[in-house]
Length: 360
Image 1 (spheres, rainbow, N blue to C red):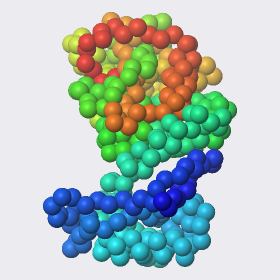
Image 2: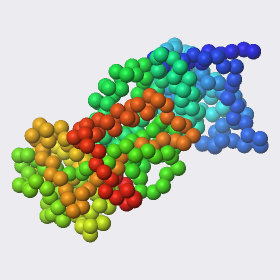
Image 3: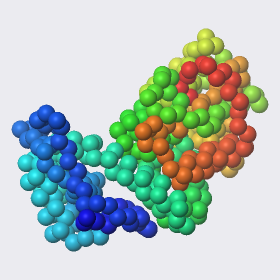
Image 4: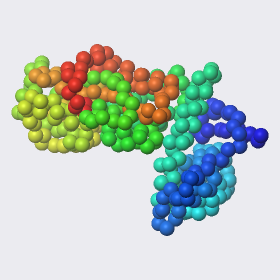
């Protein structure tokens, strides 16, 4: 039997294993096409090997033959030849060649959505097999809500890299709903998000319950007591995230339960902009402590606890039930959760109402 040595893309220490000469055949029992895009059809009876899929994904993500070839450690003609061969086999143009690089067609975008879960499953298999080796290598794709990514990610990655120097990490930030979609589609291995209000088809693990505090400028902000009641927030000029942001959802839900309605003067989704605005003005905001703790420690901001009710948000990790995360991914998530607790004084706040169902 012929065998092929499989080398997975992006691995510093690639695991090589012998596999029978296999080509992926997407052939249904009855003749049909996967999709029809601009008159093109994917011919599902065609065969594609792993190398072609890897080359296609690299070119799709990099948008340039030069960058993709460098990433794959091959010469440009070899990459162009494989892509041309793939287009011939599929009878579909995948990229439009232009002066600014390679622009994927609708057919290519459909292929990328279909192939990414397959490639992630292969990488997960490689990670599971590498548990028996001294060196753990692989690639992690993690999503995070921006408030956590901006606050604890640099330190978390430094700690993780010290333990797993051969693991590549890709991190994307965004709103919780966007990250959930990416995990479901296989574009992310896992995501650290605000707890969703509704049920998910994904596996969900609680990580941290974070206190939200009133944030004001140490120089320009109003005089405040050591603790402020939620009802007193209605008297302040506020800047808050928009309603599509999970932070705003947690805040509005907690205040609604207390029959309190606040109307911010400003709504901004960029948390760094909100924090800078508050630091330079008399406007206040309400944020998780982890977002502002460093500037509080530096004396530039003040963080005032909120009572009656106390406002918290719940951070959870979601992953696909059919694509279990490996030990390296689990370790990175644990490090991030520990860093959140450390920044917020190391005390994990008890859940005031586990059944409230709010996105936090």
